[in-house]
Length: 358
Image (cartoon, rainbow, N blue to C red):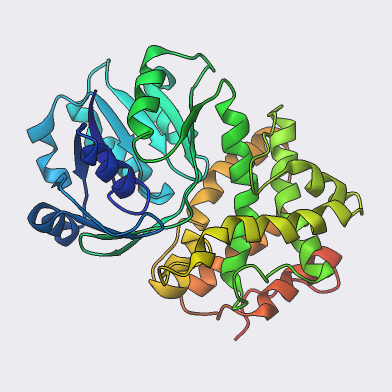
């Protein structure tokens, strides 16, 4: 299997580097020229949860895609807002037999369906952590697994071949219900985005009951959209939809227990103390608060809005969260606990959410 990986950051860069390390025919496609040049000159430097490595792997920039045409299998590991542009750059070098793999967080299925078609798409859902630290330099974070599935749920030979290749990086599982997996992480993602609007230490954002209620409110709005679409949500190691459903009904015992256990389980790999991690918390938080760049948080909204319109399910709390994220990214608002309190006020309808606060 000849593979190209688009986006050499904390997801694509780690996957591609480990496949190259195992002898796979893989090329990284990276738009940041300094990053690509450093990879070619010195190899990909990786530290973090997997130890320290310098891995030889080829990298090209998008203007060089013709040099590896015709594309056979393409793993797309760019942020949500860059998906459409990446696919449009790849299409001229693809054929009807080219397989496109969405290896992304969020819900990017609509873009793949419209631009490359469901029959050419495999959907991936990465559950591991990683970060782009600098040119030619990645940090491997939370070590976990990948889910992959065909659009129609079939278990195919190309899915098995992809599983073998991805296993070089991390355990990869095939599923006949990839949409349940994707939607579960998509729903949980709105709680994750909420951690980016506060200055609380990762893992402490939702300790008090009112903040647990906020997390439940955000996730439950997305769950209601999924329910209206008859999606069978699939629980995974740090998310289970049932405690959120219970919390929406007023029973927070299950959610409190789940939250007390989920974060330590997520972060247990840091306890060994062999590496001082640059990235803590979510990738969106890392982008907003540390790299000072736009995250993919708000880019997830168009898909949710379209699906909300289809189902008639409103998501006012998520809409308000996205307004806060937009203001923080624009420098008009600081990440602070008051942002969480503003959302709680909206939930209780005590006061309207202000468009801007200092």
